[in-house]
Image (cartoon, rainbow, N blue to C red; front, top):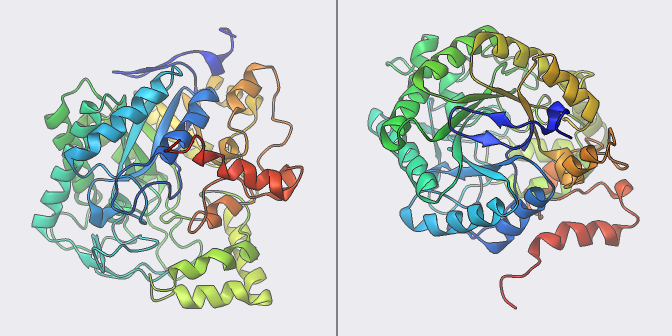
Length: 437
C-alpha cells in the first residue's frame, strides 16, 4: 500500500524505517537476575518483528546495575553483554525490522531493588512521593561516571549491530529527575535554571556523539508535560510543554535525531499509560513492592480496601481525562513546530484512520505503540489488510501493567479471549521455542 502514509518509509538522518508504526519501549521480566539476556526476550521481540512494525524500541535497558528498575531485565553495562544484543538484533533484522536500544537509568524510581544496592541515585535525596522510594543525591563524580556509562552503552549497542539508541528521559526515571522543576532541588550547576537541569542530559548526548560519532541514530524520549501533581496534589506540577520545547531545541542542536513525545513525571501515571487502574488486579502483585518504598504498605492497604480502592481509581481516571488514544497529540504538535527533526508520539494508538490523519496533518512523523501491540501483535498486518481496527482491540484495562511486577508480560483481559486457558496459552507463548530442546 505505497500510497498509504502508514506504510511509507520514515527517514531519519542516519536510519530509515520501513513504515510509520514503531513498537514502543516495553517488556517484562524475561531475562536473568544478573542482567544477562535470555531467549525468552528474543521470542518476545520477534512477536512484533513478525507482526510488521517498522522498528522496535527495546524495553528499559540499564547502563549501570544500580540504574535498573527491577531485576530480570537485560542490561548493557558491560562488554560481555554485546553478544546477546547482537543475536537479538540479528533475529529481528531477519524480518526487515529495525531495533533501537533504549539506554536507561531508573534513578530513585526502582520498583523492586536488587541485592546490589539499597538506594537508587537521583538529582535529589528526597524520597519519591508516591511509593516512597529512597535515594541518594548524586555527587559530581557519580554524575560523570553515569555520563560515561551512557556513552559506553551506546558504543556497545553499535558494536552489537543495532540500529540506534534512545535515551529514556521520560516518565520519572533519572533524566526526568534532573529535568523536572518539581524534583530537582540541587544548588550546583545541575540544578536551578532549566538549562542547568538539562545539563546532565545534554552532557550524555555530547558523550555519546564523541563515542560513536554522528552517523549512529540517537533519539530521546521526553515527558513533555509532567503533570507531577496528578496523584499527589500538594506537589509542584513540574515541567510544562513550554519548558520542554526549549529542551527539544537544545537536544536537536546537540545532535539528537528524533524526539519521542510522552508525558508524566512517574510511571505508571494516569497520563501514561492512559487507561483504567485495575485495583483488584493490582492487589495480587503490588505486595512485591512492600519492601521497596516507605509508602508501599499504605498503597497496598488502599488497594485492598473496597471503598478506598474505588476512590483511588476514580482519582486516577479523573486525572487521566477523557482522551486515551492520542493523549499526547497536543504536545506532539508543539514539538513538531519547534524542531526540524522527526517527532514520534506515543499514547494508546490502535486505529489506522486516526494514526493516518495525525501523520498527514503534521502532528508527528510516526507513532509508537505498546499495549495495543501486546493485545494484537499483528496490528500492522491488520491495518495492511484494510481494517481500521482489530476485531478485538486493546481495552486499555492496564491489567498487563500491574501483572508485570510478578508475571510474564502479556494481555490479561480475559474478555478478549475465548477462555482463560487461551489467555494463559498466549501469555506463556513467549517461552516457546524453549532455550533447550
